[in-house]
Amino acid sequence: MKIETTGLKSFIDNEKIERLLSEAKGTDKKEVNRILDKALLKKGLDLAEVAVLIQNDDQELIEKMYHTCHRIKQEIYGNRIVLFAPLYVGNECINDCVYCGFRLSNKDCFRKTLTKDELINETKALENSGHKRLIMVYGEHPMYDADYIADTVRTVYTVKEKNGEIRRVNINAAPLDVEGYKKVKEAGIGTYQIFQETYHQETYERLHPSGPKSNFLWRLYGLDRAMKAGIDDLGIGALMGLYDWRFEVMGLMMHAEHLEETFGVGPHTISFPRIEEAQGSEFTKHPINAVSDADFKKLVAILRLAVPYTGLILTAREDIELRNEVLDLGVSQIDGGSNIGIGAYSHEDEEEYKKSQFILGDTRTLDEVILELAKHGYIPSFCTACYRLGRTGEHFMELSKPGHIKTYCQPNALLTFSEYLLDYGSEESKKAGAKLIEKEIKEYPESEMKTNLLKKIEELNAGVRDLYF
Ligand code: SAM
Ligand code: SF4
Image: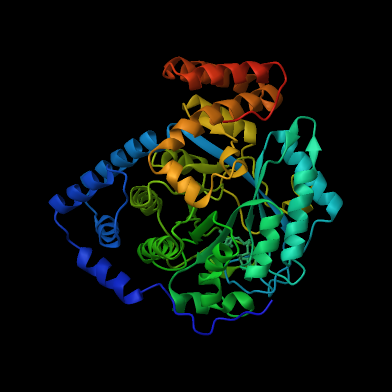
């Protein structure tokens, strides 16, 4: 793969970001209120408005912003939370990202790439816990080229353990060239996710000193190439703590705008992981731009209002308490029962396999996560219907923008949750789940959809699987 960036110009306009952030300081309350009212229209916010919300420090208005988020989340997404798990395939890496335990110069890193049999065992372990959606994660290494990624994805799709199967594989890997993306697309991936880490080029270049990842523009245009290869289901993200979070939120917005303007489709998801301590990385012990819990909540809320139809992903890097708090602000996807050691799902009790890229804040099992979600009135969803029915990219936008997410996703969440409870639920989660499902069905408006939904739930109880709208 040849890394070629001649002729490309960054679409991240530092000057504009800094100007908007500076102009937004001290904006009067009336204007902030106007922006919050506009957000309720669910049409999103422009960059200048996002800057105003970022700079707003008035606690009363911040609380009002949280209420607005909660309303928007309810109206668009309902009380559904999509669940997934990361599957680390290999941690060989030729880059030297200062914050990552897998970086080339970390000689203490326990390097491992799953063999095909190990990959199958990991998949079986994930299926046996009830997972249906994975994100497969790879270091950057010539070994993990597009053919390899496509091959490992195919392997995962072939594994069927009892009633278990993986129905959607997303990818978090290095950016590819157009030919590479085409190969990976053919293997049937869902989202291709690439985090820009930081949108501040100078900082980026300092923190990624060598290897292919040191090329800022190659990564920045990584998802443009994916679009050109026909992958219209993309995930963007910034690693919070590398540079000022205010700049990163503006960078994420500019990236989303760029994709929407260039290809007519914005990102499907946005991630905003915070730096966690990584083995052998001094940098991660005291990140200069570490984001406080209060700022983290604020940034999640701002993203929810700015791009109401884009999925927001929160990972188990965060601890349980904060995870619960931001769920209410509009996060739509979380991982559960995550293990990020290579081979760790099938070797849960072996110390060696626990060595990982960084340390997780939430180490609950999937069933524990599900039980807590259900107790708080959230419907855990393993739905993969849209991607399997081709409702992605532009089609997805057409469906989702008028608010159809709720129409399709809510019944599909109930179906996949029922399926989980039947096959994998503990006694406690079965009890909490049944209560929640009963309540949801009672409140579901009388309609043809309701009749069909009830019919499908009966079929699930009779042993049929994988039902969706
Ligand atoms: N190697 C590929 C890449 O860098 O894009 C994909 C895999 S990499 C393991 C996935 C993501 O992990 C990175 O994009 C980065 O944002 C995140 N990451 C790395 N070190 C981290 C740390 N110490 N804390 C939290 N997230 C981290
Ligand atoms: Fe390698 Fe990705 Fe870690 Fe960087 S973040 S060292 S590219 S695995």
